[in-house]
Length: 297
Ligand SMILES: [Zn+2]
Image (cartoon, rainbow, N blue to C red; front, side):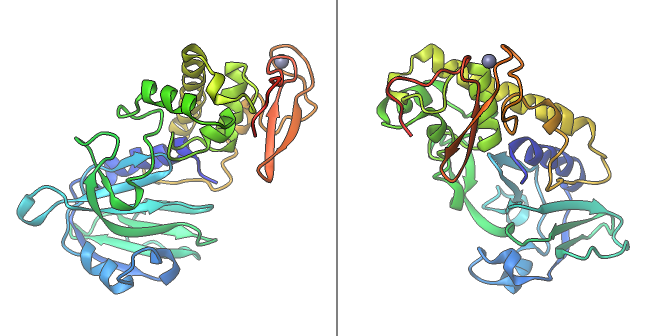
């Protein structure tokens, strides 16, 4: 499943291939891929035709391409994309063979490379959404469906002090807080475990007992692990092929906690433990990340 770093790699690729180009036509080959676009596939395609794509943006795992307004005016709408489990945005020669799971195809009026949304499992989706002022930073416009989603730690709009104060008000554990999209976005299960291992904090640590320094440590760790994944994704990125690998194997070799049950902690050698957590798993080191006396799940 693509996580924030993979989506950011896609955003960067799109930036160089679609920015400033005008859509000639869009074709929806599977209605499920535009299921969140309430007015339907024909309306989706109609809204794209003739519009110029501006520089793509990202928040957490959401990606959007603002569409230039009438007569070059400010964008009022954007194409919002979520890649789901297996979604890929591909750029390539327009006359190449159609992929088996091609769901949406966008052609440009310059007859150059086209943009394709390929999604085997169809959990991903695209829609055209209104842009509205961000709830967290009114100077920024974000698509209306994600206005309730907090900034991610790699965004300038992310407010570390507000994050700390919100943690102190919550009666929850730190990992649950990291996965809460209304507090911080883009941190999935893997990056949460990795960040907590780096910050030496147990996943059930009550957030209302956390110090400012501990909150800062978790944030810094999250930025580090995401940055490292981004660097790897960035180097393997073929500029001709905007791609997200649904299996996302390239970062696995450098994971410190996630998926390493019974393997030695890279810091202290103790066997990494696995706990049940929200029908998933939490991996941590029993020595570096001792269980708090008062744990919150
Ligand atoms: Zn350890």
